[in-house]
Structure formats: C-alpha cells, structure tokens
Length: 262
Image (cartoon, rainbow, N blue to C red; front, top):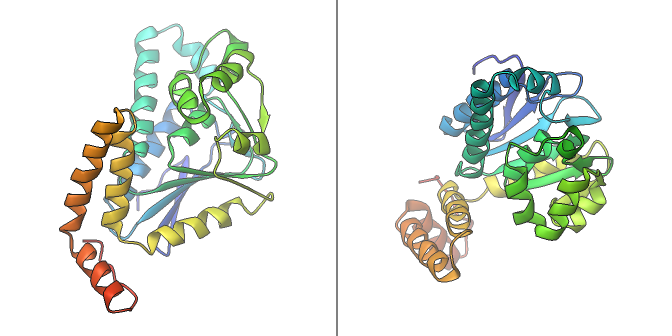
C-alpha cells in the first residue's frame, strides 16, 4: 500500500479502515483531501477490500472542517479556491458512487467540511459525545463541500436551513433523531460498531451490494417511475451473475451460500 502522511490505512477481514490524521483538528486542507482521494482510489481498486470505514485520529475529533487559514489564503486567489472546491466535490461524489459500502465512524467533533464528508458516506455511526454542525455562516461564508445540497436531502429543508443559517451545533442524539446518523454508541465503541456493520455487509455478494448501492443513488433524484426502471435494470444485471445463481441455489438446497463476488 502507498504510504500517506494524512490518511492511514489498515485492512482486516476485507474491511479497510481509513484514518484521517492531521492534528490537532484533522482539518481537510488540500493535502489531506489529496491523500483521501488517492486512498479511496486504492481501496476501490483492491479486490480484497469489500467495505471501507472512514474515521478520525484521536479520541475527541473526527474532522473539524476545512482549514480556515488555507481558506483565507485561497480567497486571495479565486482560481485556486475554485479548484479546491471542485476537488472536494469530486472526492465526495466518488465516495457516494463507489460501489463498495463506505461507513463512517465519527469519534468526536464533526463540523463544516467534516460534516459534509460524512454526508457523502453511505452509513454513519457516531460516538455519543460527537457534535455536528455547519458553522460557515459564522464566518460570513456558506458550505462549499456539498453541505447545502446533501443536508436537506438527509434531514429535510426546514431543519437543514435552521442548521445552515444559525451555525448551531447539535448532539449525536439529535443528529440521529433528525436522520443524519444511523446509530449512536458510547464513546470509544464507534469504530467497533462500524466494523460490526461492515462485517455483515462483507458476508454478502459484492456484486449485489454494488448493484444495490447503484440503484439507490442513480434512482434517488429521479421521479419514482424512472427510479423503478433503474431498479429493474439493476435487478436484471445482477440476476445474471454467478453469485445470484449461487444464492438462489443455496436457498433451495437449504445451505449457506458461498459467494465469490462475481
């Protein structure tokens, strides 16, 4: 595996854990985004990896957001600022459409760009001490890594606008209540909970997992009738795979399926 300064990778049981490590706040400055981008590409291409977990180094900080100092410098060079925003946009879009499940284990403060990162992941598990928010409005700016678009899709326009326009932070419990999180666990158990969830998914056929993710994300923004057509196309596509035949045969023969991800 490639050595990276800001993103560490470990692989076990076909699950890759990507740890963002940029102390003290794990801020998403440009080199961190570059490391994350290349790490995602490497894990996407690795046939031994069936699920990815993203987390933050340290006990109480997931990602505090973008690097404010870097933003200040970039405001003086609009062309470079636009480039950074598009880099983040492309990375987060890549995560959403990866075809392998991406679960985020949120171990602490999750603000600004950190909150935008977790919203691009497929599932979100957080420590009960984690805090969430989009505080950009307090700096006289707005989110630039997708916050104004993904947050309303997850929690609804009214609640999203409240968070975006006040810059208020919310607890993990409130984040789960409004639909931002899948699960909240005691501090220190978030990574284990994410791994437990990943293990359940890794036991399935990689092909059916991929087609299911594609069906959800390709159909989500379409009218229902068009989305149903997407689902039918994906069903037909997966039905011709080796694992579909194996899964159905194993069910009829009352035995455990042996998936080969093909």
